[in-house]
Length: 444
Ligand SMILES: [Zn+2]
Image (tube, rainbow, N blue to C red; front, side, top):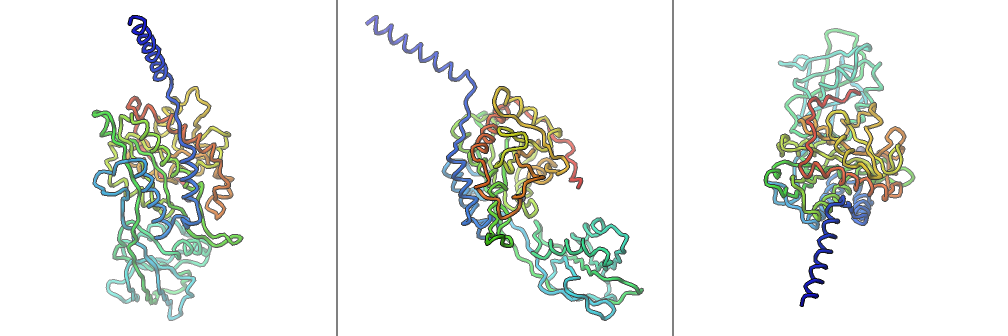
């Protein structure tokens, strides 16, 4: 009996020793390369139709909701599914006639911003629309920008010197305008024409349709395991929408958005899967795939109104991590690096690993403001975007050629692994990044 006891004790001691060794070493982060590849290829497939519009957007959202369900995430408080549904409003000009001094102005030289079904204006209306004559010397975008959210009825006669800017605006408005709120009661009419006389005699007649468009973020939650930390949230996010169908290039018209941002969305799914298996997050983790980033960031705006920004201690927004960064493999950059100490914490957690984060090397691109992190950053959240894209030279960006074949999935998995590792001390509650005090604005 003794010897057996001795052996049992010995074996037990060996086990304890091994177990201690295992927990004291840095836990190796294992992100599933298979999950990354499968989610990436599914989201970037032609079947998803560029993840825009009612068909492609819905297909992608349903797929992601099924992934969150497979992983076993919980629903966001107040929701009965993983879909966080909201409404945007699409306005479309169906008819527009402008006459100046009894002369009709060519259709392509007129523009309308309106949510009113019918307009029928003349200079002798009471009250009449305000008339602005924009001279050749005026700053087009400075004057026009506020008029795109009209707070009174306005007719603007734009000097033909601004033809270039006018055409650009026209292209933007032609495909229909989406807005997060129901359009207000006022309209702006623009006409590209020289005005030589005073008083001005004009007529405007127009029809506009407004459609409510249903959109959905996909949100899943891993509740914090520590009672004292569970009300503090760490958000991992990416936008799943892309540009849909573009004018065909060499017979291809589907904007697959493999890098932008199926790559980031795959990261969110792979991270959710990883952290769910870890089962040791002290803080609550919120995984969100945003809708409608490309058309105005409506998804993150809606999301930001469903959370308490004070409770969000950090936001890891992930955008375009499919191709190696300019610093080489095993690197990525963080936008708005100096706006909080988020980046420093991440770098510290990577010490000794083969991976490193760098500050955003393209400050002139204003990338901090060009993704969903900016919405939460403006509310004080240390919300940054992690990316590898060499955007100044990325010819595939927003083209129909942003396809899986152009990605390096191995490097992408390394980036996701680094994100998981670098987030460890924030998830455990050991580190809390400083708040963003003044997010600032896009200076372009
Ligand atoms: Zn994009």
